[in-house]
Structure formats: structure tokens, C-alpha cells
Image 1 (cartoon, one colour):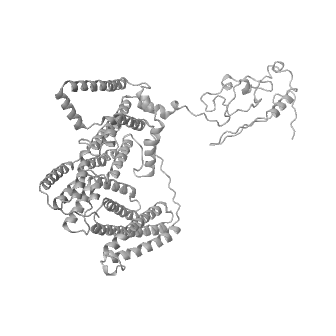
Image 2 (cartoon, helix red, strand yellow; image 1 turned 90 degrees about the horizontal axis):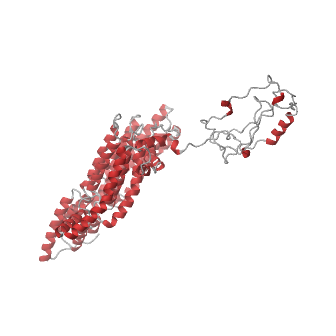
Image 3 (tube, rainbow, N blue to C red; image 1 turned 180 degrees about the horizontal axis):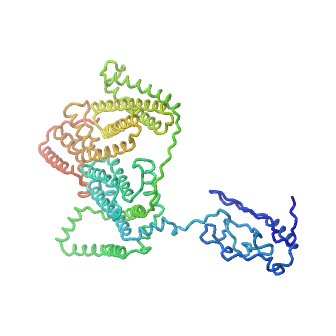
Length: 638
């Protein structure tokens, strides 16, 4: 259908320009409208109009648009200047209101103001965001400056006392200092601390005291990182982090955001606080002035002490004795300052962000159950049959005491030793299968879901039998070949897994049983007990007592005891008193040198009392043996 000109009718208009539509998440297309066709249509319609606006009677002229309509609202997200990344098309103006004589806006090339493409979003500047402004308000305060200063001192002391030093009294001192500062830093007058945050202080104190009781290098790789994780969790809870359940994936995601993602996004805030950016209070500036005064006084004090030491011999002797007792390695001073400064930036960012993060509601994770019971029932049935078959065999060999029916060529201890790692793998597989079907099996059909739960119950009971069988095999292995750190940790892990299997069976019987909460509390408790247990000293004491009493078929491996921590030294000295040998004496001397390298303050533990007594006894015995030499037997290394 062709369009005909309407003469002097003011309602005649060119074809309307329809801009491209931008959908959410779509980049605005570089669309160029048909400008030439639109201009030709306007030119064809203009000859039918006489003169211009001046020739039209005043009654026929439309009113001018008000000033509010002629401008673009600055608060609108579309009110942004023209960007070269999104070229706006040179579209003609609409003639609906102004008629054909209205002037068209100039194109962008001629300096005219052209609106942005539809759907264009201008990102908000960082300093104008709500999270930045709220974090600035909470950080540029006296507590914010105290957090930066505490982070710097704490990380430097951590580097010197723990990283270069030893685990011991240093961990207890730093843990107490960090907890006390956290309680003061996050304290708000109108908001009490969550009870869970206060309860987490109990395992933190137990772990710190456990590291201070004895030297446990065999278990510190588990207990010390777990202590750091609990301190981070307590920091997030004291800051008011919202959560639905402490042992859930939603809480893990919230912790990642609050302790890692958020602080890394605002890693420049510690520098801004140190530079005094923002409107700080007078207390905050005074704190930094005091710190700078103490820092500048250190070189002067060191210079004066050096001059006094050269001037007086008594003062020099006392100063040397104090430095020898303090055991400060001045060659590591630069490393302490550098590593401590780098670590303090992240720790300060964590403290600032935790206190100044915008409160957010935790969105529950929508877990979709997609495993059909018609698939789960036959799968679990076949698995249950195989587990039950193995259970019957285990009752015959390990619980029934039928040693005569063992396979030919195997002793009872060899049979118990052979399949332990296979049983541990099967135990992990059974536990994973039970958790998978319990979490993802559909629950629409009540009878089918009940059948799935019953099969999971049988699977959990079968897993418990596998666990007991593995523990019995390990105990037989230890009785024949002695105790080691790996065997002790394996027994500890299997006890923890057995308790979790009991909770898994309870979850199969009781649908609303809090499995995750009970398992989490069990893991925390078992790790705390592991920190209190002197693993290295127990391994050495068990092997020495079993050898002296004749309960083991093998001799004591001196070199294995030498590789343990200094907690094994009392047991080695007792063995030397009963059966002295040159190899054992050399191993004890190496342990004494290792103990002398520990820091007398930061590396002090409670078992140092018994270690010092054993060293004195050994030295007296060794001196007596050297004055009156007697032939001594030597144990061969196994």
C-alpha cells in the first residue's frame, strides 16, 4: 500500500524510526538506521507545506514543548554522554508534536547531543557504590587504624615466632592476642556477639594449648592449619555474617566472599587508612603519630645501647646474655619485615572488610533431587549384596576366630596386613555412595523413598563392619610390626569415620536427623583430641616398651626414632639405660642438638621438663660409661 501526500495537513509525518531493542545481557548492536530513505521521505513531504512556521496562522501552530520535556533526566541510567563504543544513529526527530517545520537535532559529528543506544548501562564509579561508601565509613575510624596497625605487628611477630621459630608457646600467645583484639574490634554497643562465635573460642583454645603441651610435628600439619581456619571462621561470625546452617554449602560460599573475595576486591583500603584518606577522627591520627614516634625511636635506642655496651664491660655482658637468651637473629630482620608487611596487607583487608561489609541475606541453595528411586533401588540392592557377602566372610575369619580356615600360605598377621588399604578404599566408596543417594534421591513417592532409606541403612551397617575389620587388621599389624605415626593417624581417622557412620545410620532411620551438624562437631572434637595427644612420644614409648617386654618380634629402629620430634627423647634415653649402644647414643645426641636449636621461649612446650631431665640422665650415664668402658651390645637396624 503506497503512502500519499496529505498537502498542508499538519499530521503528515515521515516513517517512524524504530530503534533496535536490547535484551538483558545482550550487547547493543551497532545498528545503522536507513537515514537516506528517511531524509528522502521528509523532502518529499516538505513541498506540500507552504513556507515555514511563520506562514502558518498562530491558531494552527502547535504549542512549543515545555523545557522539562526538551531535556533528558540526568538521574536516568540512559542519560549518559555519547560513547564511541556505542555509536548512536543519526535518527530524524519525530513530527508528532512539532509538525514538519520543527528543526531536527544535529548529528553527533556536528556537536549535537545524541541519546545513547537503548538499553545501554553506564557502570557506577567505584567510589559512588554503596559497598564502597559503607566500607569507607566503617574503615576510616579509630578501629580501622587500629586494625591496620595490629595486622602489621601481628604478622611480623608471626613470621619471627612461628614461621622462623617453632610451634609452642608462641602459638598460644598469638592466639590469645588475636582473639582479644577480635572481641574488641567487632564489639558493638547495640549488638551482642552470636553464641556460635563464642563457642568456637573453645576449640581454638584447646588447639593452642595442645600445640603448647608437646612437640607434635607428626600431627601439627593437621592441627595448626585447622586452628587458622577456626580463627578465620570466628572472625567472620563476630563480624555479623548471616547464615542458615553453620555446616552447609551456603555458609562456605558466604565465608569465601567475606574472607577471600571481598578483601581482595578492596585490597587498597589498608593503604588508604595508613595514608589518612577520608575524614578520620582525631584519635585515629593520634594513634599513627604514636606509632611513628616509637618506630623512629628504635634506631636511636639501638645506637645508644651499642655505645653503652662499648663504654662499660658489665653492661655489655648483661646485654649479650639477654640477647643470647632472647635469641634474635638480626640477619632475618629484613625478611621478617618484608613477609610480615605483605601478610599484614591481606589480614588488614580481611578485618576491614568483615567490619565494613554490607549486610546480606544468605540465599538458600536450591538442591535439585534428580536420582529416580527406580534407579536407586536396584543399584543399592546389588551393592548391599556384595557388602553383605564380605561381611559374612569377615565374621568367619576375624570375629569367629577360625584361624585354621585361612588361605594356605598366610599367617594370621599377614592376612590381617594384606588388605588394609583395599578395605580403606572400599570404606570411602561405601560412604560416598550413601551420601550421594541420601542427598540426591527423589522423595515424591513415599514407599519408594522408604525402600531407598532401608537399603542405605543396610549399606551403612555393612560399612561399619568393613570399618571394624580394617581396625582389627591394623591392630594386628601394629602388634607384629610395631607402631608408627602413619598407623596411629590411620587408627584416629578410622575412629572418626566410625562415629560418622553411626550418624549416617541414624540419618537413615530419622529423616530430620542433623547429619552435617553432628559430623562437623565430631571432626572438630577429634582434631582437638589429636592436638592434645603426643603422637611422637607415644610412638617411641610404645615401641620401646614392646621391645623391652618382648611383645614384638622386631627390634627398635633407632633411625626412625631419630626422625621423630624431640618428644621421643625420653623413651630413647630409657632404652639406652637398658641396652646402651653406639648407634642409639648417636641418635640421642642428634635429638639433643635438634632440641638445642629450638627457641627457649617461643618453642617452649610442657614436655621440655621431662626432656631436660632425660638429657641430664643421659649425659651422666654417658660420662660414667666413658670413664669405665664396658662392652655394649649393638642392635641392628631393621
